[in-house]
Image (cartoon, one colour):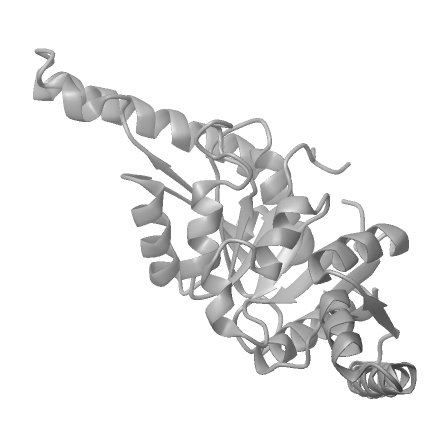
Length: 300
């Protein structure tokens, strides 16, 4: 698999961003990769400040930018010294999600790393939060960090919809956490199962349909798992039920420290822009969430 060589992590110096900073440094150390640490100053906020201060704004703006440059430089130096990695500080001005996407493209980042919440946690519950905006726009994987890292990832859950991109999602999980135990999971149901009784289909036939769906999913996951390295470090779970119920149950059962998911599900209409399962995990998952954009294929 292609090695990860460059991480981009964004920070607003909040507590939750601090967790992302630590995880980014840990991953960079694990992979022998470079880390760019970005802080974006809001262009709108600076414009507002300019309107308030009027005369003398230029010197105040320069002082403000120097303050954040110094803070980011100290942070980068601290991470570089503690983790023995190369860390480059980067200050930008503009809309944060746009600046993150632009910087990731310019430096050729393999992954973006963000905190689950920013300086204003209440805003994260609404559409348009920085993490969700970055995930919507990014052409590379985005890791949203929720927990304080205490070492490399150990238990990773990989929910799969058995679409053409499932192998790429599983390989991303193995690529990011090569020594972790992977659980490849699939939640299934029988199409129109709740209505089959009304159509005169017997419980026996419905049960048979379930078993066929289960066996199909198990066979598909086994074939996928056989193509991964470290085959001994995985297990397969296939459960009947809605993904929004099954996947959180498996996260708790496995005590997963990361869940890896594709941005889109099988239905482009239902999962317009950002898959419903992905949105659910970003809000509710008790662990870190790694999101892979659509269209990526398995790496050679």
